[in-house]
Each structure stands twice: as C-alpha cells, then as structure tokens.
Image (tube, rainbow, N blue to C red; front, top):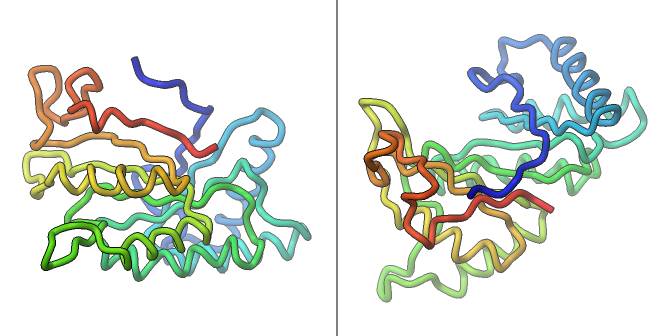
Length: 212
C-alpha cells in the first residue's frame, strides 16, 4: 500500500495564492492562519506558485512583521514543467533558504511535466558529471521534495515515463525526496485513466516519499 503522509493542507489548489491579482494583505492573512494552524494542530501548509518572486517578497514581509522565519509547517513550493522553467524559478525560491526566510522544506511540482527535467549528455545519452554536479548544488541550496506527474485530461500533452525515472534515480541519493503522482496516458491502466493507480505503477516508479 501507499506510505502514510503528514497532515497536509494544499492551499489554493485551483489558483495561485501569490498571483498579482491577490492583495498583499490577503496573502499575509493566509500566512498567519497557516502558521497558527501548523503550530497549534500540527498541520502542514503546502504553498505552490508559478510566481516565486512574489512568494519571496511576501515571505520577507511576513518575517519583518514577526521577527522570525516562516516555521517548518510552511512548505514553500514552485511549479516547473520542464528544465527551462526550473532554471528560471528555482534560484528565486532558493532565496528563502539562503536568506533565512523559511525553515520548511522547499519543493518543486514537476507536474504537469511537459519536457525533461534532467538533461542527458548528447553524445552518450547518459547523465553527465556536470548534470550530477548541478543537482548536487540544488540539493545543497535546499530543495527537499520533487512531485512528478504527467498531465491529465482528454487534451493531455505527451509525457515520457523516462522523464520520471531520471530524476528519481538521480535526486533520491542526493537527499531530495520524490513523489511519483501519476503518468496520465503513459501509465493508464484498467483501474485509472489518470495513470495514478499505485498497484499498476512500474516498480521503479513506486516512489511516494515526503521530505524528512
């Protein structure tokens, strides 16, 4: 069966709390509530955004108001469907750890995956030493969790299962927990059109970890 998970609350799962359309006072109020709930009841607030610059700005404002970092019950995350988006967004969110604005694990939602995250050496089709060093730096800078999944729905874009296998093989030994959520069409079975049936996953993709 699936491993047990912490008491997670995924805030604004159908929108972006850090969108430009959300007033700063609303974001600050949400952070206050999430922190109070986490410290009083042990819940974890998963916060996911496509706008890590806004997340960093609001986290800085929260820290200035309270005189401390966002506590471990806040899990700051960003979405990146391919390597180009990861390269653009990760250095921004990583400021939360570098500048001691957040104590919780930083994470990335690689879902929907629309292109590879781990690059291969063009000549050998293997992971190069440079690529390994890149992800070692990412781990050292604070990435602790990667959620992986293909796009669902009737118009789902192509998803290659190798896009899931490579980060799982490379990142787990570096201390980055991996959670394979679904493979959509590439992992579809008689039990699930979304490709999220644990019993039907390829063995190497039966990975649903949470950050320590």
